[in-house]
Image 1 (cartoon, helix red, strand yellow):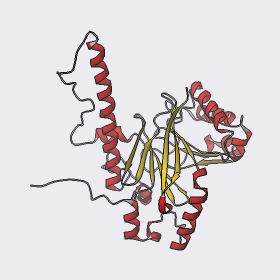
Image 2: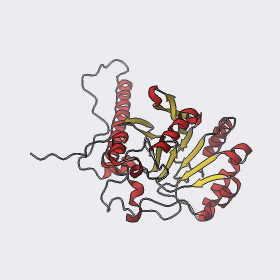
Image 3: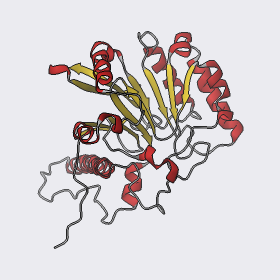
Image 4: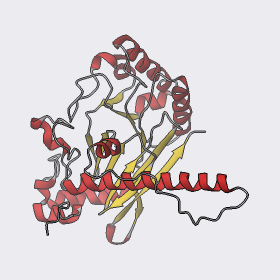
Length: 325
């Protein structure tokens, strides 16, 4: 018999022990174990202050989206220190011309500048989506061209136009941000079509509200099916150690930048901006999170890499799903 499966899973700590600290540091910023221990001590002392507010599918061509962003920034403007705001594309609901797209980013800039302390001191990271301006069609993709964001970069002091995917280091923690329709892409190219909605069993209790009850069962089953698909997609990319484990015909890759897509060792957190419902999974010590589309329901995620200090200087993250009413 022949069996096909994913590679053996190796969590981050085991992989670093096997490779060595310097070989596993993609940032090339930790030169020795003593430097790592010093950074870890600073993490214990100051890390709980850090917070990421993450939005995906921020459609700036929608007035309601800009209104909700303003309300969100108003709520966080009193925080000290301010959170790091990560906005992931697509930044328009449909492809737009250069003039219109520039105007939408100008509108966002005006919203941010209503709160001077946020504009001056807040950190904003913009990760492009599949349909945003720039060279698309292959991964990784570069930042949104400066032409579209000149006003944003001029008036918001700490605006960072990042690549997709992009990586950040928070003390010793490595966080990967990736905007892709991951579940849909995996489903289109799978060998066996997964069943998103399981059939409702015939022996379900039926009463006078039988139709409504059956409908609720289907809704619950649909949500459960989507959750399973999300879990399989995350498990696939982590097991394969790559953000795009698909044939090049399905997902082209720039070979000279392929290392940007690698997930070995696992990051401490993988934030995937997908178009499916929000989810959180902890897979082999890696936090896998989808903030969900902000344009549909105004959902976002608050992520604290250091949410709790445990014994022996160990830490635990904190994930909070939020919504603007």
